[in-house]
Image 1: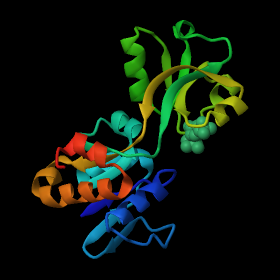
Image 2: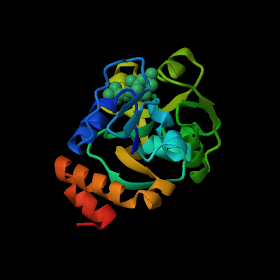
Image 3: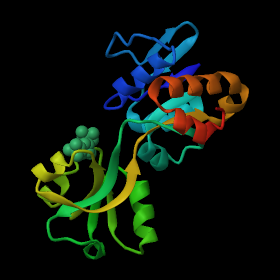
Image 4: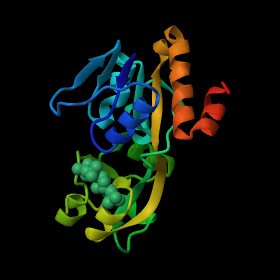
Length: 212
Ligand code: PRP
């Protein structure tokens, strides 16, 4: 089986999850991107590229629900996981409300979700795509507000910003290649069952796979 695991914040939990399902491959070289053992393979792209790698080169991936929504990849998402819990929110200097966003510049690493949200609210704003450290955008005047991930809220507060509206809740999720779902049906279900057993996700497995 080919597993697509994100580098970065979700990596440790993701590797522990694989271990709990009996897939124990040591990631012993920071610069290597593919690891193989006992017929299994782990590939390690950046978090936001997990959906596309799972769609075109993997069987099972782990990514945030935000990365999945942002990518538009056609994947089966059978099991939400109990980590990577955070939210995607509109954040601005104190005093702004959502009505103030009309005509403003909004910086984000999530342009697809942001555009969709603004369209659904009929807010006409200019979305600026950036790759990180978004809190710099209001500070330097390149944007009025940002759409960014809030976990503890610490980064936002340290940069004198406040959350004005949550757009979506985020958590890690298992994603499955739709072809593999058919051609490796038994292996994939067995993996999902083992993850459920090991990680206290039994209830979620019941709900999402109907296999218990
Ligand atoms: C994320 C996010 C915020 C921060 C939120 O950035 O974009 O900046 O974490 O976390 P907090 O609410 O716990 O403070 P990340 O560290 O992934 O780096 P980046 O901004 O360079 O993408």
